[in-house]
Length: 222
View 1 (cartoon, rainbow, N blue to C red):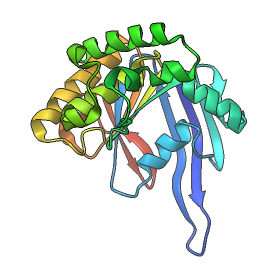
View 2 (cartoon, rainbow, N blue to C red):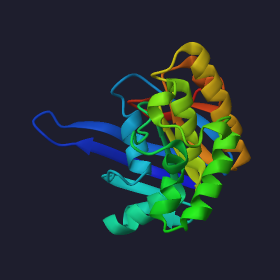
View 3 (cartoon, one colour):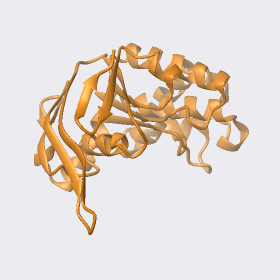
């Protein structure tokens, strides 16, 4: 599903520094991994490169048979919309849309008919335990519930790859545990590959494989 080869990224400037060097990674459909490492080591940069939000200095990123580093900005935007799902620490749920509309947004952007998009959105809300809250506004939900909505939105269009950046960073331990269990369940149910960036050992304990990102590259921790 995902093949990364010799990926490198540095930032120029008076104190130009290398962030990622010679990163290698293979990820299969349905495989759920965590990337851990010290703050500032480049974990979020790695996600940005995989998502096509930033360009590497060298290397290759092949996702579902498509070489991302060769795509134009417009082509990358379309590819992200169709093939990637995102879950962020800050939820990024639109406050003026109800839950059904928030979850349906990726389908709406793809031009799906409103009825079809809302039907699929309703099914995803059921899957994350919020089936009775479709017409609720985000302000009526707890942080854990908002992250459930974010997971539903990330998977509603059946992406090939899910990218999760510290998704439990704003949650209390009980909510975090529930969200992590749900995230794993839904990733497996949709056979989506998933990269979870985290500092949390509890989060890392829920994945199939843990990688450690350091100055010498990416290596398997367990």
